[in-house]
Image (cartoon, rainbow, N blue to C red; front, side):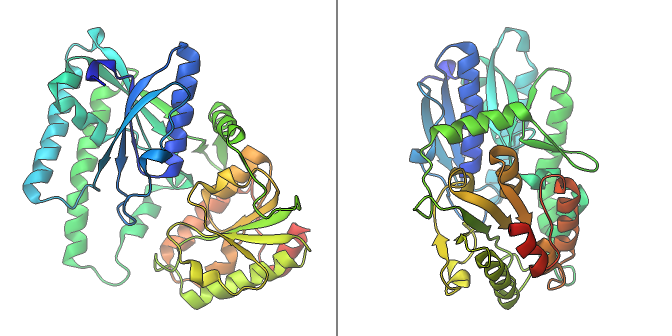
Length: 373
């Protein structure tokens, strides 16, 4: 595939990103009435390595796609990082020149401005022919949190260390370049928002057109009854709080045992969907409960046979409600008095303020049982 044939470049890391890119490309194909051609760049997850494979990338019926994989940025040798940032600046300069005569190309990623996408314009074959339209696809509820919450997540747990200071200084470079790119592109109709919801005060606003495009994909996928037998079930979602240092193993097990007991009291089947970055063994031995280890967005398995979804601060709780109309319940308050993490306290508070119009927040096991009835 030659560069002059490209209609889009998608830069993705997770299955959720792949789904968002596919929803956008399919909508674009339907609107234009033609099959599109694109390049999909699969980036390595900073903590978990590659979580996507070529077979996971579907960009719509008839779309022609080639894929390329990149290692996570930030681990390269110093001079290689300098060269990369130089390519970004070179790409920015190229974007500004002769934009009126260039073909529009969609740069799809979970970022407002993708630096990886801009770096593509350092090459003359791209820069001479294209002007970028940056499409920000959905990343999750975290995109709506205040910057202060993210700062708390990055702070060391005790004290201040030289490596933490150096890491933050290093992270300033892409932020500065990103801000420069936004200033250059503002007013040029170079941005499209494709998030499922937007943070407002006091709650979230759902982007119905985006929600409909995601739901269309889920309906087209074969959704099976995850527990079989056609019975209604309760789906419990885990999050990797232990690995994040938010709470200890014993505290997580204690909370989940209470949640499982409350769910079982309804007489419905109970399943636990383990987060990809969580440890499955933490939830083993909780009685007659099914552990689900499916390498796909949980939304792909919750559309059939699920009566209620219970979790903590997962974006999937909101998606369950707005996409499928499933009862969604957060038990984040069960963990609040067991964690010393200021980040968890603040992020849980913001999550509740944003989502209380969609999600129920029981304070203890008794309230949870009543909500699940």
